[in-house]
Each structure stands twice: as C-alpha cells, then as structure tokens.
Length: 425
Ligand code: KIV
Image (cartoon, rainbow, N blue to C red; front, side, top):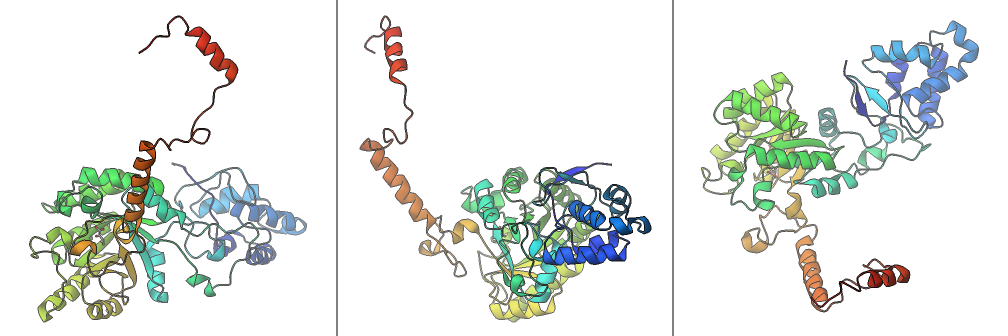
C-alpha cells in the first residue's frame, strides 16, 4: 500500500459519526464540531472523545484513539499517521485512498481542493463557477493567493445554508488553456503549441496552484489521428503535467474519445461554440450560433459531449440567449466565455483580463467579451521606463538601500593586501 503525504484536512461530522459507535460520544463530538470549540481534526476529535468518554469507555466500542483508528478509520479507506492541524500542530497526516477532504465541510474547510462534485452542487445552487487561465507559476500563484484562507483555530462555522455559500471562494478551476500559445508564447495561433510545450506549462501551474481544480487543453493535433493518441496525450497531461482533467474542443467527432477517457477515469471538460483550434476552418474567430442551423449545432454539440460523459462544457462566443437556454437544459455545468451571464460559470484568459498584452487585436481592445480588470501592461511599461531612466542617471542602485557594506577594517586590509598587485586596468 502506498501512503501519500498531504496537508492535514478537516473531516466532516458524518465521517466522524460513521466512525464512532458510541451514541454519547457522537453527541459530544457533534457539539464540539458545531461549536468549533475542541474537535477540529479527526485525531484530535478522537482524543477529545475518548477523554470525555473515559467513564463510559468500558461499555463503548471506542475505547481509545489508538484502538479506534487502525480499525474503524482504516475501514473508511483512510489511515492517520499523524496530522498538522491548527489544534494539534506539527505532524503530517498520511492517506491511502482519500487524498482530499470530501466537499461540504462548511466554514471549517481549509483551502480545500475543488472537485467535480463541487461544480455540480454549485450549478444546482445557481452559484457561478469561477474559472481563469493560468499559464505559468506566477499566474498560478495569483489564483492560489486569493483562495479564502483557512479559518482561524476556534472559529465558529457558519450554519449550513447560511450566506457563507455566497462568500468568496477564489477560483474554482484553473485552466492551462492553449491560448497560452498566443498570449504567453507569441505564436500566431493556438495550433502551433505542441503537447511537450503544454506539459512544461502545466507543471509550472500545478506547482503554484494547489486548491483549484486543474484542467489543461489537449493541444491541436494531439488527439486527431486516433483515440489511442488522444488517450496517450491525456494520460501525459495527468501524469507528467499534474493536471486533474483535460479540455477538448469539438462536438460529435470527439464523443468516442470523451467516452474512452471517462471510462479510464480522466475527467473531460468539453468546449463547443467557437473552437479556436478550428479557426481556419471556421474562417476566423467568429461568433457561433447566430443562425438557425448554427444555433442547433451548438445545442446538439453540447448534448453530444454531455451524453459522452463530459463533466462540464465551455460555451465560447455564442449569443447569450442561446447559452442561457442550453445551460438550463444541460445537466452538466456550462462555463461561458463570450456567452453571457446565463451560463453556470465564467472563464477569461488571465493575461487578457489583467490588460497585460497591448496586441489583442481590435485596436488593442481585444474581443467584445473581454473585460479588462487592470492595466498591468501599462504599469509594467512605466516600471521598465523608470528603471532605464534611473540606471542612466545612476539613481539606481541607491547606496545604502540596495547595496552591501564592507567594514572599514576589512576594506583597509583589502587595500593593504592588493597594494603590490594594484595597477591601472
Ligand atoms: O485556451 C483557452 O484559454 C480557452 C479558454 C479561453 C476557454 O480555451
């Protein structure tokens, strides 16, 4: 059996209740978990429970954490070798088949990895799914750094169904989109990006972004020749790129590949509407679904990929009315880009929404659907200009602020030592 070290994560009350047989102990744990006063991790909870339960221990099946853990906790597919939660501090916890906490642990959840179940439940609750591209380590860190922090030790969890569901959750899905070909590599289209280049970017993103669900595009050509090619490419994105899922552009023609990947356990996000890998065949980056036949195609493509097993579908550049209509009828979440607010979630290209690139087409404005939330490009240019000016004026580096001193004694010793060899250059 292989043990995987992961950060300590919190367990929900139902796992604990499943674990504990004694009703009195369960009641006490229930109290502790709901007030957040004592038991905040499994090991700690068991200790607390068994301390409290000492008088009834002889009649309880839970005699001590030491006895309870290897039997009952292990039976749940999980074994605790130590832990690092705020209440117990220090050690790490190891898992076998439960690498992440299950969804829905409420306000006590630390920065927990997002899962497909989360996206389905967000769709049900009509809470928008947030998705943003990340193309390298810094852009992944931007995403990770706005993830909600773990609650302070002792914090009281919000009751289920309270406004906490509307609280900021950060970015649910980080997409290593093949848009990186154009915005990060300077290629004229996404079709120039190879699988090996994609893998390099995926690994950088995976190092920086640990709690968003990670999805990467299968690059153009990596899945076109055969299903086997597609499976091999997808496996590489998971195994070598450290992604959680793959995204594939297309409709009925990718159905067999989606089926196969779903069978082998690789989650697929589909992408219909404007599919940039086919921009040449589509005569450019054009809005799709504006005519009857094109709108029907968007609907049929979305149904086909859903029925094949895709867990979500990107709708790109389709009329908002059509996107909302499709969203209402699909079981899986739709993620819109240029498809209006009626989708279950939204995605943008991070470099574009940050306003990094001045060369976006349409006179620098980029596509109509793009909203720039910052002008990072202009700020960067100002900074580079200032640097150049200050270097030329010898204002940078500033003595004492950006420089390292040497003690007078050492300096005099140095001059003495090089007296013989000192000469004009
Ligand atoms: O490549 C990409 O970044 C994408 C998104 C724009 C959806 O496919």
